[in-house]
Image 1 (cartoon, rainbow over the protein chains, first blue to last red):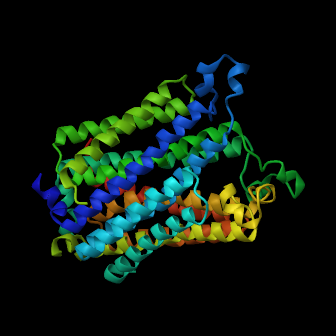
Image 2 (image 1 turned 180 degrees about the horizontal axis):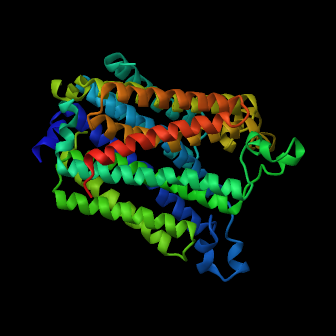
Image 3 (image 1 turned 120 degrees about the vertical axis):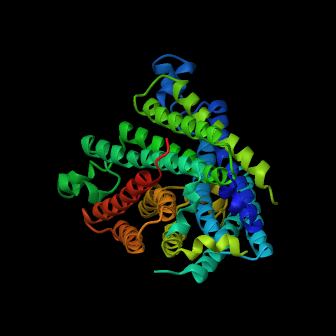
Length: 155
Length: 155
Length: 155
């Protein structure tokens, strides 16, 4: 067992593990919010999901799109598009032996930016708040990718 | 070469590698099923994809959405939304030195739940079968995230 | 710090880190291309994004879908569906101690195929160019998955 925890003896890697888990949990939260809006707005994607609301034709009218549901879904997809690169590049970055303080700064800013992005999307806040929070998270990931490529480049 | 396989000397990590590969392959299978339905239903997303079915306007009528294709695509997106967190949190969980039997239980239940989820989505089975299988996979990932945060928390 | 870089002493793992970062950056580029088309085509997903183009009703007409924007978005989703499995299975493959030359061949072909896929999607090139590049990337990932399961299988 000891062997597999060696990586987690490293503080920068532990920080990565912590923040990666936090942003992945935040992304998972979007599923629950989508369900909440689908149920309260009675707007489902599949006939079988609406079946409890009525039989046959009367259920079909609940198979529809709803603005609030679609907004959460766009936020969820944006999370996938941005948190997946953070997870992947961040993992390689954490393995590249960064300074702990620099690594923490990257992870904290990314996590903060993505949490704010979700708030800005769901409220919604006027632009450019959402756009800026997206750009901050994007820039953090690019900065980590630069460090990874500088450290490990092997083409 | 030996160095890079050290992680795989650990049984819990080997179990993770096995089940992570299985669920990622299952997710990849959705692409083939989508292609199958696009071709049999003659429902394409791009004009160039439909070009072999006719020239100009006669091909354009095959650039359309189809209920069966959209159902597979929703299943595929649901896989992305759930298998990505499993892959990420599961990796960190496997590195956190869990008991082998506990880890195996998590991985097996998740893989089983996601395979059942796909069957329930594509058949489709009446609810709540799909919803329950989704919730089981979600709960497994949350349980692993809890263990990761308890073990490594470094904010 | 040394500890966490041990993995990166391995050349096959360094090659993985390099190509994984490259394809994740390529995927991130899709966000910028989407933004470019949304702005030049004036086609936004959210009312607040179009607010700078006019007030109230006059802005609402820019909340619409556009063929060019949708094409980039389909390319982006296809990246997620294919680069996520490459990242995950490729990581486990790199840890399984492959021959360096074999590993490099897998990573280079995948990266080349996905870059070509994006060019074929955005140009667009006539089929089957996009389909073939998709299939090549898919086959590379399956080949790595086969090696992972053969090496580590623990059910």
